[in-house]
Length: 249
Picture (cartoon, rainbow, N blue to C red):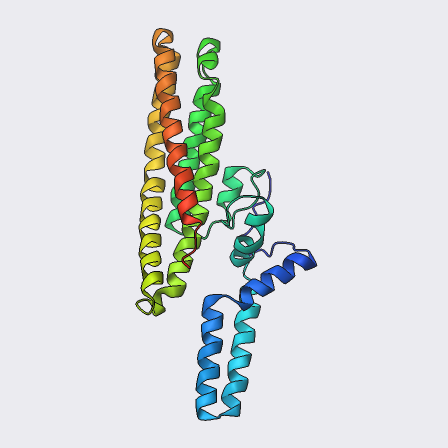
């Protein structure tokens, strides 16, 4: 059995990638705000020790951010694999392995439950008779696509939620950003609803696969319904990925 990679494990980086992460950590909004606030207060009071303390705190925040596995994945890995800035591992991993990189919590639990159902649907297809397998030939790649999109959405959802948390204490100071944050909140809610409903939709697909294998006469009709359902799920998940991947400016 393949060993599980722990979420806290530091990804291996080249010097170029490490430099990119450090530069991104240096301009992380909360880190910059901390620096600006400290410099402003020290300039007003003329306090040298406060200036030194501000610089020390800023350096510590940059260091901690640049060593955070989730921050590293969000900054580097998503771009290297040509996907969204989701913080997810490369697509050549199974969706189950990629899901283990999600932060522990309700979103990850729902995704893992949905992936269990996804495997059940695949097993139902694989155990069908030859006639049904031919009819369901296009279903398997779409199922794989759904599983990958689901993990992408969950990863982007967690990144968006982290962005909201970072800006929470500064809301109301910029009307344009406030509007962007409200939009991002709406996208996070949509992602939660979609993730929550995926398991039930996949269970419905499994029932349709079973019915198709039991009724060869109606197998083609069931296959059309299954394909339409998968197309709809993949379309919605892709759309969510596009909207969640936009940071508020």
